[in-house]
Amino acid sequence: MSTCSTVSRDIDEPVPGTAATARTWLLLEQPGPWGAKALTSSHLDPALGRALEAAAKDTGVRIVLIRRPGRHADRRMPSTRRVYAAHTVPGNVWLHTATTSDPGRLLHLDFAALGRGDHHGFDEELGGRPHDGDPLALVCTNGKRDRCCALLGRPLAAALAASGVEGVWEVTHLGGHRFAPTALVLPYGYAYGRAEAHTLKEVLQGAREGRIVVEGCRGGSAWERPGQAAELAVRAHIGEYRAEALSVVRTTGAAPYWEVTVAHVDGRRWRVEVSQEAGLPPRPESCGASVLGSPGRMNVVAVRQRGLTTALAS
Image (cartoon, rainbow, N blue to C red; front, top):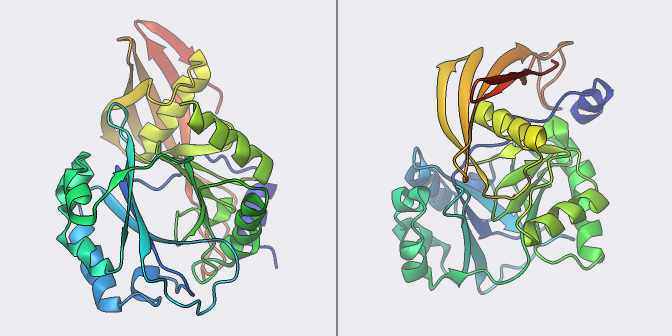
């Protein structure tokens, strides 16, 4: 039986507009095995996991667990854990890091402030500071969520670590199992599908230089999915790859049609028409799905700038 990622690759399902949405990412180191819902099914206290989920709800903050690549089953808990917070909205992109011996201290954070891009509470509560190392490469490896993430993600994370790439972590869930192996690169928050070691190294080099690689990119997590597709289309259309050059400033409409306004830091603006279509043929959206589905795909129909219209092929 084919895996969900094999089917997706075979039909050449497009990846733009499929990234998880989060203005701010909060990463907590948690070695050992992870269940399907890792915050409440790992060696982290499940009561703490539920409390963190509740605290982050509707704040724009997404909490995930991370661990170093390699053997992980029942690894002894470290005395201190690494914590990262990253805000991904252009104009206020940052990545801060801290360590803590008590993950319960994360409940003292002001999640609404984090979601707005204010890192002061993180720094004060946890002794956080700006991350001065390489960009982070978070590779989804949670096989309990979907077997493709373990079968394809764990070898990718291990290969990157073995080749000396710093900042590589396994992560619990990035969504889009059918695009495995999937990865998220911080601080800019762009996600990638069907990632390979050599292409991800190029992505990380670009992030070091403040550039975005659009090939294989699922979108920037700062935007909702129509905005993700629109922003990537404008990047490709004008050849703009600076990470913070573009922002999604307005989205109107509702499924299956939106108009998205994308703004450049130099003042230019584009109106992008985005439609949602059912992905055919029907297929499992993940290996654990019991029924066939038709996951929606974002289709950029046209890009308009100051009265100029460019129609794009479906």
